[in-house]
Image (cartoon, rainbow, N blue to C red; front, side, top):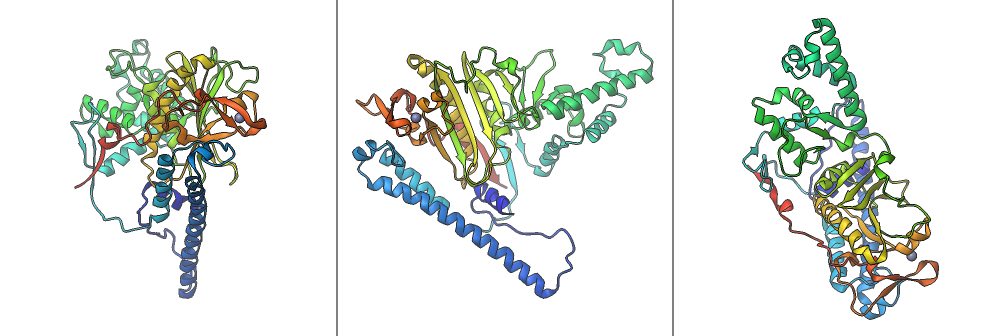
Length: 451
Ligand SMILES: [Zn+2]
């Protein structure tokens, strides 16, 4: 219940939550009242606890604001070391927003889904959201036998009609059916283990929702747009001609780390004997991690990377020739919250290539996180020197530095760990400040309009 409320609050800061019982209770009138009061009490306690935590965090920003900037730039031990007043004030405003939001009544209104920024989807308005949810639910059926049953049902009488698998044609019907069932079984297995499905199998799964051939294309575009899957072999921006399109659903990937083959050129990022400098941006989510964020982010970055290999918690890929690793680490208790990090490496003179590799991914994540306006998270740049040393607890510079220009006349900043080590500014500040709150087309395009 507690984490559920955190999630609702993070996504829709003004939502009203209505508790609905699903089982008959055998409570006395009095007990009922007690239980209701207890629920309210627990919610109030959690809110109080959260508010105290946020107030403490806001206070740290206040203290940083009270310090002279010159002075604070000279004290690497202080929180928000090197962060500009402008960024501090923005941070403060966000904490204030998180503190002020109260649960309110959400007016019951119909919703339309419309994607202005997608060339393939902008001609369409999705008005029947219940049907849309039915469509999405098709891909959240995790029971292998049910999936197989559905496929067999939808394809009965179609397998022969497919024509593609000509060797099958010469076999008697019974073994044909058997072969077809085996094939479908493999598809289902591949889907549930690796999140892989070819377009023609998706067509069978969506059959009740498809009337015309272009409906399938439209639905596939919609699934991609909603961050459920990406097309593995579609050339960027072009439709696929002839060959079978394969789709990857990251939320189904089961192998914990990506297959090692994908990393042949990639020198081990966590390796000790490593000459290159490492860049790592870490996002930390102390209260709640948006459900499905890693899978959605995985789809979102697809247009930026090549030669990718997906694991359940990690993606290895390249931006051009520069390797990038995106990792998710689920929380281990209160002291170690959920983290999501984006990393790359390069030699110091070429460190700009590593920045160029990770910056679009950072910006893409920032855009995605705007869908959770009530979410509290922090962002840090891990110290390259500490990472290189293989420190289990690398120093974290404030992520605000990413949106600031490199300080003039300063070549190095100080890492307070390991006896005030000096770190080249090029390892903490990107060559160009990143966009923080991008009013990007992507973001304004997705509109939920009242009917
Ligand atoms: Zn360090």
